[in-house]
Structure formats: C-alpha cells, structure tokens
Length: 76
Image (cartoon, rainbow, N blue to C red; front, side, top):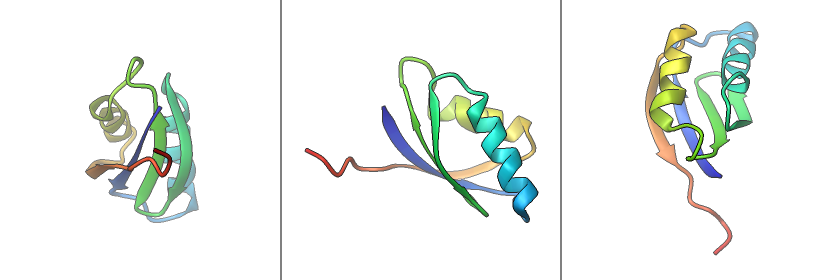
C-alpha cells in the first residue's frame, strides 16, 4: 500500500467530508485514512488504482483535487 495526502477543493462542511469519504470508499484498492475539510489521506494498492484515478473519481463527485503528495513510510 502507498500512502498519499490530497488537497481537496470544494469542501465546506461535514456533508462534504462525508461525500468525499463515500467517493473514496467506493474505489477498489483504496483505504481511507482521514478526511477533513480541504484534505484527504488514503492508502492505495498501486496494482488496483493510481492517484490519477483517485483524483478523477473525486472530481466526478464534485471535489476537484489540487496537490497530491506521497507520504514517506515511517518504517524502513
């Protein structure tokens, strides 16, 4: 699994957080780590999906993705 954080635009309330969470949970190979106003953190299986596909799914749900950053693994 690869961990990424994403800047998510268009989020302004708790309903938006739920909407982004639902959109992410619907994707195969994606585990939601945290969703907050303006951002989301997920772990994904590179064999199943990619950051581009995750971004596309959120965009289709009405939440365009800005910056995407890979999170360095804390364990060597």
